[in-house]
Image 1 (cartoon, each protein chain N blue to C red):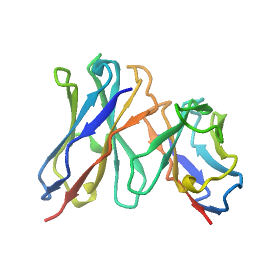
Image 2 (cartoon, each protein chain N blue to C red):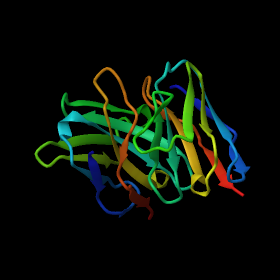
Image 3 (cartoon, helix red, strand yellow):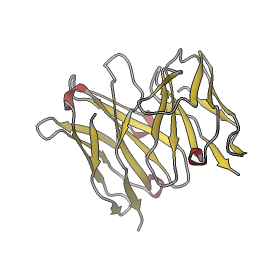
Length: 106
Length: 122
């Protein structure tokens, strides 16, 4: 099983700031990496797939990069509605998720 | 785009089984894979398994083998997840999702149902 490790566990920033979330895989997943946003009490929403492609309707302040074992999700200008938990998921083999990063807006 | 509507919340006794349904609309059912993901209270997401109606392919996570049954009824565009020998640790929200999996390649999950809460309690 491929283990995904996300860091940091929690981030607390102000609106307008730029944030970078990390996801590291225990072995290469090529570019088979997705990012999801989950608001409290809601189902996750797909943000990024193929490591860097934005899903339909996702604002361009969200961007993804990386390949192999190291990936990042960047939010260029934090908005209040970005307060959520963010998960990475690999689908290069039997899918697994990272443990999540909680983003709080000050 | 496909939409997924899940069945309602369930309360079950330990040792019993639960069957959750997921009805797809707005797309061609057999063109998508249906994947089940669960989330324990306050915890992260866990991939359970998938079915590809087009090929009849079913894969599930090793930890559920023997307890998990995933099926699909193409006539009603509905997928089902049945989990047996329930224990308290199975309490959580169960999501069905859709993706463009093939037999050879898993995919990301671009459409999610709203989730079904399953509570296992004596």
